[in-house]
Image (cartoon, rainbow, N blue to C red; front, side, top):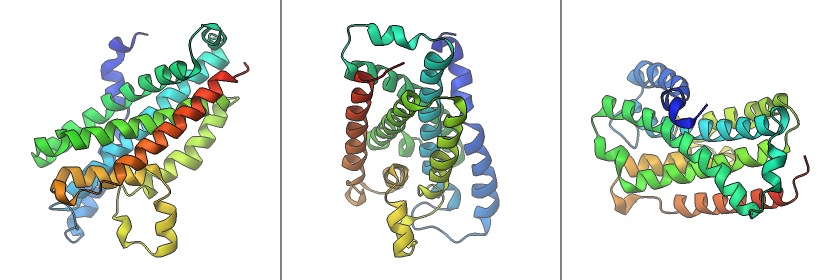
Length: 239
């Protein structure tokens, strides 16, 4: 089915979980919590994290399952490998498809965030959108690499259960990592989603002078590293 026909379906797919978290934690639990360091209340605090979460989930999942479908079921992936196109171009093409999916879904979460806060510019300023695109590129790239290596859909489930789901809760989406003890802080700061959540939160609510600029090069470095690994994988893929 053409992507244009499934715009509503794709945009709504990643909206369910963030919306449940917003209702349960932001409106439910958040009403009993003290004012966070960033944002007027806990609901505002977690909204940028929900945008990061939805973009991660759909960028990774959509790309991984798309490649798995081509490799394991329709068997059309071998034909693509025969096309005289540079492996990096093949990777970028698949990665950009995941980026588009992630942006479509996170866009719906952004609209929900604007409805709850009334702060349009907070979620549509250039710095916020730059971090969002980088996050989609990182996890779409990871999805490409996973899709090229798994041998069954059950293996995709393992990556989802042991990488994506833990990162959803440990990637600073619901808490400020600066408040964590040292050992746990090291683990949290190893996760790319942590830098996205920190950056999006600062881009939404803090002045530019207080923005943690280190988040941009970290995500850019991870995206480039995954691009090189993905191009290598495409060049040596045997299916």
